Length: 307
Image (cartoon, one colour):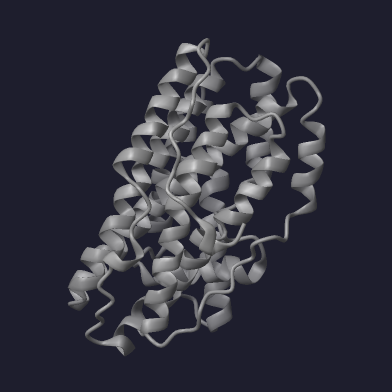
């Protein structure tokens, strides 16, 4: 599927004997599709008062967000490999609602950065990591695919929370810069759709976690700790790009990074580590953001990550 073939979400035809929990999730997805259709591409006002100032202050932020939003097409291919027997409600969510919405976000942001004189995005739409193919193959073993599903929900929780926080800061920054048109018609409509995605992952994660056995929960925690990565930051250059985004959004210094990590990791902390009293944030979340800040600082030859 190409980026130009995204259509409005379809209403899910549920099975008559669907479990109550799946019915609740399906109702949520149907409501998302009906109340938040993909943002119309012709509804956006791309007026930029000062393209140079916009590009200097928010160019790295918009470039990163654009790539992440457009790469949902590859993400769906990955999910089809990772979860060969995914519940129908999951497929309904990521095929019929999430992908159309996010792809339109990416198309809008891509045009915005081009209007500011920046390069068009070059997203990776089909290069799938070998580890995902292997994990998908292992999913045929009883109990393993549920762990993969849990990791998918946890990644979704962190990703959508990151998006909400980033779009909130971008919106405020654009208003401060005087760029009201794009704040109102680009960022505000996009950020309005992200919380519904977060809510889906939270509902699904809470439901599945209660169904996992002790060994599945243990392995989920272990894999999450060892495989956690921030969305869009899959190699050293992209991790440094993430560090630039953090800096431009004024998330600077160790305490700010730790607080940012706390907000992003809070949902999985409460779900998976309720037994660890006093733990404020999963350490692997904070380390990922700290590494991004350090790599960005090293690339620019300064020590801003330590400030």
